[in-house]
Image 1 (cartoon, rainbow, N blue to C red):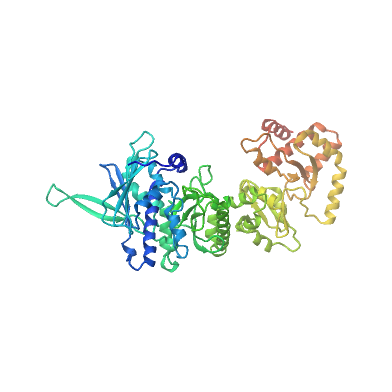
Image 2: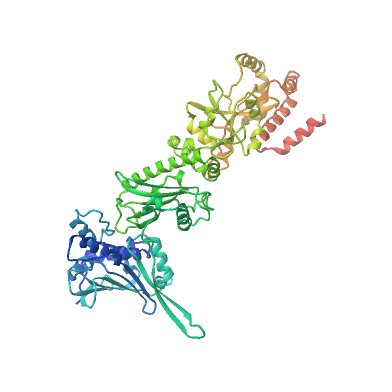
Length: 627
């Protein structure tokens, strides 16, 4: 006689099939996890029942596809269910026999029952038009079959079964245009899903493989059958460290994370505290092809009791460590009823905090112990550290500042900020840097030549984000960052300052006249001592430099152009000074205007900027040369 699900159970079953589970292949994970629970229950019951003899090595899960019948069978030789338990566990949705077992055995340590909600079984209806469960309990001589085609109800009838355990037969749905249910009968698909989700179930998951080959000297085919164990059972991260070779970790990494190169670093840890977890993490040698694209998905694999819950749990990694690959296994995390998403975020936050600290420490060790390979790694992923500082407005600078590398003017090699500060000259107050597209172009800047001539080391900033990072960091170890193109840069002695101040005051009116020729392009014009042999340069006032203006205006979807406050500085000791003063004294303002425009264009080209009016400048240069 067919029995009806309760009204609320019907509604929940519909939700189960259409809403709770978003991925149809999850059904196999759920049924295998339930089978594993049944084996666990039998084993732990045997520990307290002298009459029950159970050898753990005999416990197993078996999967059998039948293409002709279009059925998929999952069976175990676990504790089994009585008629009443079939009624209770399968007749009432969300009634978990596993949870009840755990509650009744609270004193038994090391119980790692996977199921806790009693709904995973119903994921079978996502792929099945009918489900039959035949089970025989260790507490009963009789076996029973529970059968259902979904929300229309179920029946329980007496059955024949020789040994204890449970056998689930799924009658797969007909194929549709969107879904081919036949794929779940393919041996390679079954093996792939077991490897993906249930590889570390600690009982063997077996499938009978059938091989055919021709007999020798005959056209007849010979059939050979053999059992194949689909899962590894013991996770590599739970084996004793001394029993795992480096090559095994490398093979695990290349196999699980589809990388053709071995990782740069491997580190494994066990953390005990508010939330216990084990982690196995890898730092890649190179960036994947889509790393700096929107298509890249960060995240660590998340396991609960050896069962894969999420393939990429993004909450476990901050964006600036998004390159890290690996996994976390925890028995303490709370899951939602589909085991596809997390229920309590605070546990994941606790794990993520621990993971972040582990990664930072490992990277610091990497930098200290293997500088050459760290520099290779930094070229691939260093931008993430910079972005981490900038995107948090400097809040993460303490975590990331000592992982940064910059090319130094001293020997054109990478240095850390700590190394720069350690090598600073006595009484040096600033960390000097210069920005440009390449190191060679930065070296051509007249401001750089002057600072180097004073004996100061300069950091070359060639990434578009570099200067923004220094702006939000503001200082390192009490030393402020100073752009060599900043108007505030002052390397003169007191005597030199007085000479320059007097020269600027004397030519104040001339500069105002010259500024008229450049209109809004510069905020002021003045003499400088920051140049050695060059006649002119551009410097910036305020927090935005000319290079920052260039970067911001190149970004897509900007509402309007930003503008740095630019100062044109003329070398007080260059011959061009006398020429400009002569033109002003003779009131040849037309020629003075032309020379001013040429000098400004020259300064822009030196800084690596384009000219807004190249034709006009070309004509002015030709006119000046022809005189």
